[in-house]
Length: 140
Ligand code: HEM
Image (cartoon, rainbow, N blue to C red; front, side, top):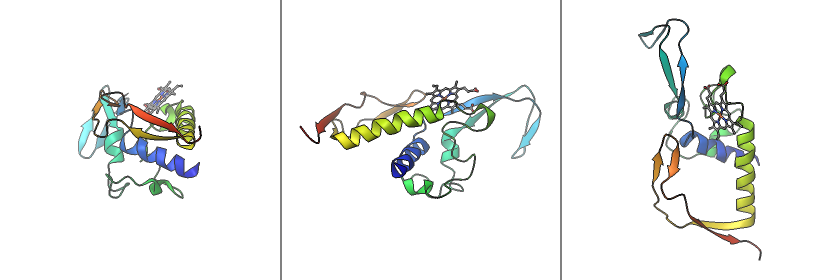
């Protein structure tokens, strides 16, 4: 399951279901020369964090090997956020995704019916036609 987990992580990196979240600023701070005052709302972006070449070299490339060994730096891979308000459903979500993939690939050969189906962001990425697929059982 380790390779499958790396594949899931790489999908969550390139196509994060949650684009980010808003945080209420509780004390003034300065970032990159900009002063952010208390009371403002700040949005942290999962997508742009995951595209930062400093943490993910060649960021557009699909490469599950990024997650081998100790993996990315802490707080650089944040599909579920990070810190005290991190998603409490993260491990449950991973379990569901991995169980689904395991059953799909061990039981079926499958193919997309619309190879060029577009994905819309609304705000999460969703295949516009619902990703119709053809399933062929390995054993009848
Ligand atoms: C692929 C699936 C999921 C993704 C990508 C995801 C992502 C996120 C993200 C990015 C946050 C914001 C974290 C932050 O603000 O720092 C969050 C918060 C949260 N998520 Fe998820 N989530 C997923 C599934 C789930 C599931 C299955 C549950 C519940 C069973 C869940 C419950 C929550 C709750 C309650 C919060 C608010 C936590 C707080 O503000 O303290 N999520 N999630």
